[in-house]
Each structure stands twice: as structure tokens, then as C-alpha cells.
Length: 466
Image (cartoon, rainbow, N blue to C red; front, side):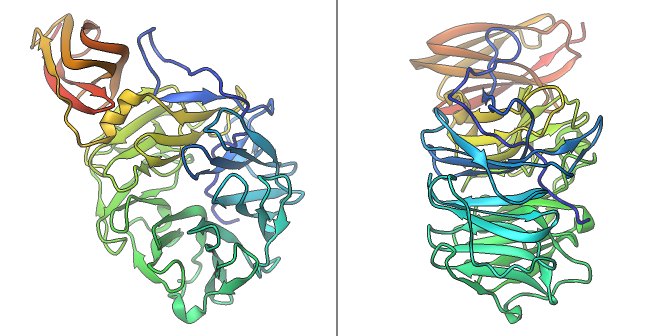
């Protein structure tokens, strides 16, 4: 069986639920938590954030034992859609078949979406809804019931979609539609670089920005089209068969990484020329010895990345959220406690993620929240008076902050590796003193980040030996 990249969680969500906090009463999670209504756990396949109000998700109920998730008999596929930013949700099943699997979804509003998938790892399908999921009808894509395997679909406009599948008859099977799936035009093989022997794509291992679209393969290659899928180029990455997924912030700057959720030792490579050449990132959290739940998400047209990961097991955690302000050169943990899968952002203020299927509790969905954190996703320097005393410190460090107008704050205390020690939120204040207990911390250099919606500032201090 080919390698499948879609084992996160499915979320079908009831009305907005309470946000979860971590640590003490001052601590703040970066994510608001939603509980799906199924009474069971689901594995996310894809999240589509159309805008701040319209969000779709699809997923599959996975077979599971004590250590392994697998696709087996009695799987069920689901969708959820909200038109009011998560306050209310419509949910239901997707008629993919008796043993269904969902690759991903492309949506353009709260009513229209197309889902690609399979029944019993054959019988490729693309299903369309125009009524928010009440009914799903096949589109006219010419998938072969045995030879075709759809991997990735993207909507450029409400009418224009591109769908990509594994090689069939010696060429990657790619279709375009200009009337929302009524008629699909197959891309001629002459427009697509030939596959390498044994090469195939991965489910949901694609990305699109503007009219440029990419997808990755098990041979570590990235295919790129600059004209919405009409003609294609192929470029090698250093990842080879360990290729996992890709993410781009614009037509030039992107990230490729190893597979996620199954093996440790994550690797990431960066491109600045649209995928033609790649440079390895060498300063990853935990030296790269972690598991991820989907590719790190770019903030569109920004250098900021958001990654959900665990340095432990995918069933046991701990689960953490890390960000990078510089396309992966440096990393900082901002939150813990949430399994952030398929993180998807459309702006510094709007992002969603879903949970990898769990054994111990019903699946959870996460909505990025907390306006002070937005400051970490902007280049703006916070205009504030910030002092830390004493510095060096031994037992405690007192932080004094003053700004001109009352606002909400987020304080992050990180060690030299970026690991989060403590986070604190404060509401509607212009001046405060916050004390951090350092007694249990090893000696070394620590960083305090002070963030509001307007920007952020960082200060380093030294903790002496106790």
C-alpha cells in the first residue's frame, strides 16, 4: 500500500466551547478548544480556511490499537463547515464508500466544496456539494476505478479547480476545470515531466499560492505549475523517499519536510526560488528529533511559521506549538497541551488546526486565538519600557513593563533552545510587574518575549547557578 499522508483528526463541532488554559490562572493557551459531537475520535484529513468565517474540515474514523492507527474496515468519513467563525457548525457524513478514505477538500464558500478520496483504496472519487454538505454528487473527473489515485485538489476561484493524481498510463493524472467540476480537461502528458520509476504523489502533499501550485512525491521531487496547473516543471529535493509535505508563503518561499506522525528525526528544507533549489534547516527544535502532525504552516506572505509537534510519541505527547519568525532559522515554543495537526493560517489573526486521532478522549479542534500573540507574527517592534531585575538573577526575576495605552499582553519565558518555561497573559493594562520563579531552572540564558496585538519585544537575561 502506498504511503498515506492524512492521519490527523476530523472535526465536526458544536457551538463554541470554552477555551482551555494551561498552567496557572495567568497562563494562556494559543488555541481555543472545540469538542466534536460524535462521542468518538476521528482523524483529520484536511482543514480548509476559506476566510475568517468559513472553515471546512474533513476526516475519517481510523482503526486503532495500542500503538498504531490504520485504515481498515468500518471507517467512516465526515465533514464539518461553519459560516460564522466556529460559533455554529453543520456536520455530516461523506458518501465515499463502504471502506472510505478522504484525501483533501477544496472549498470556496460555505456551500461549495469538492472532496477527493477512495473507496477501499480503489474506486477513486471526487464528490461535490453546493448546499453545504447536505448532498454530495460525483463530478465528471475521468478517474479509473482501479488505476487512479487522487492526491490533491485546489480551488483557484469558485469555478477554477486543479486536481492531481498518481501516474496513470505513464503520466501523472492531472485535470483542470473552469466550471466548478461540470467538465474536466486532462492535462496532456507533454505538459508534465515524466515520473521516475515507482514515483507517486502523497495525499494532501500539495500547496498553492496565487496561480502557482505544487505537489510532492515519494521520490523527493516537487512538481510546480505557474499557470494554475496547465503546464508543469519538476525539481529534486534532498528529502528523497522521506519527503512528507510542503508549505509556501508566496510564489518563491517555501518549506519541505519529512513525513509526520510516524517516525522521529524530522528534517526541513527551505527554498527561496519556488522549489528549484533547497537549503537544509539546521536549528530545529530538539535537533529535529520530534514528530509533527502536518507541515509547518506559513503565515501568507510572511516569514512566520507555525508547527505542531511532540518530542515524545504520537499517542503520548507531550504536544507543543512552536513558531519561527525567520522561515525556520530560529524557533520558539509558544504553547503546550494541544496536538496541533494540519495548522492552516490565512493571516496573522486567523488560523485553525485539528487533533490527530486519540485513544483517551473525543477529538478536539483548535482555533488560533489571543490577540497579543498576533504581535509575534508581525515585524513591528513593541514600543514599551521593559526592565528585568536582577540580571543576572538567581531565585526570581521581576519584569516591569510600561506602555502608553492599556492593552492585552502575552509574556513568554523561553530557555536558550526555545523551550517554553512559562507563559502569562494580562488583560487591559498599561503598566505591570510580573515575577518569575527561577529556583528550579538550570543556569543559563533565558529570553522573555513581551507581545501585544501591535508588536513584540524580546529581552535576554542570565540565570545564575543556584
